[in-house]
Length: 105
Image (spheres, helix red, strand yellow):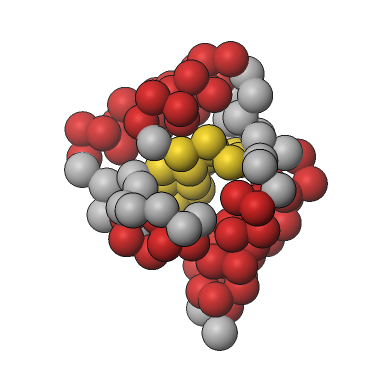
């Protein structure tokens, strides 16, 4: 199943230490320019999503919407997460491919 592949890619990025998660960490990563990809949960509150989209656009960071808050957090071994910042180019590309595959399904 393609969603499992996406979850695996996110967990791999977490194990590599190339993920920022949690509101403060994600916003800090976006402001610092370290973020290569921002993954936002599909069930994120509209105002939060709007704020994250604005920050990602300002930082010129690709933003992809995938999974739910519960699944996104579970993929990295944490509680519910509205967003995850990927901090590595190679892992970001791998995750973008997984999300594209899931979106086409």
